[in-house]
Length: 334
Image (cartoon, rainbow, N blue to C red; front, side):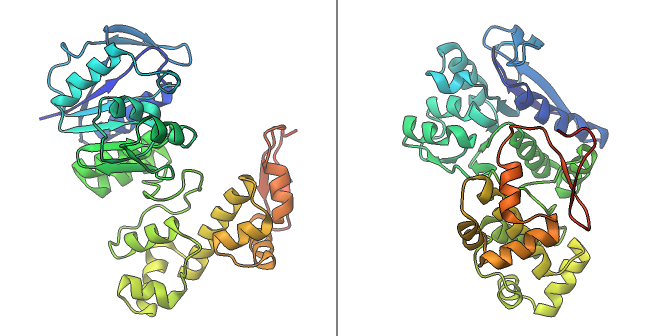
């Protein structure tokens, strides 16, 4: 039986909250994992997205029929005022008969106002996490998570995190190989592990080996912790030599080099968030200013201060391509 997924949409809905997950599920059909997608809105008919582009042929909750998974999309209007009664009623109706209920971005505000997230862990776009927590104190908001599962409810972070969430749903339904094939087709990582900051750049697709996955998730969640080879081997319950072989096989690098890259990613974001070089070095796990400088120059061809000056603002459109000798502006940059 084809799995039916109902997208709850409304005027002002964020386009990518719908199109990103829908494309994941469409790609699943190319690998014989078919999903039937249906757009559900309070009044049916045409809905205008935040971009002004329409979504046509939506149906009401009463006309939707059987729904296995509900996915409530987000939109700015959901945070600016209490959710309107019609949207709440629509979501309540379809969620009550679904086996799985998910939200993308600020769609969590709809589930929270219905009381469906009371006493549960949840997440939303980082910019609105405080508002969600303040407006619904009975929800345990995890502002840094990419997506959070609590029972039959799954909530995701901002906008593109809906793709991560939907890949996780496909993995639940059809296994990691199916999700991995779709991720490769879409040129995205299979997942940004839960607990990883919404700001952090994921550098590693999850490995096939089950021994490595929890270890990698723990490093991504807290790069500044002690992640030398002996401690990582103990955590994985294998010898250091065997762990090194696993990293070479699965990730094509050594544990130490991989951890350094994760710490570099975290340091980059800390600098962009306004941390000093010393603070970024300490909180990323790289330790000292000098170590941070060496790692930046080795991987990016630029020192931390120059990195922050160049990328800490969107005042100019500029693409920098790392080279062996330094950095080079791409053609057409300003």
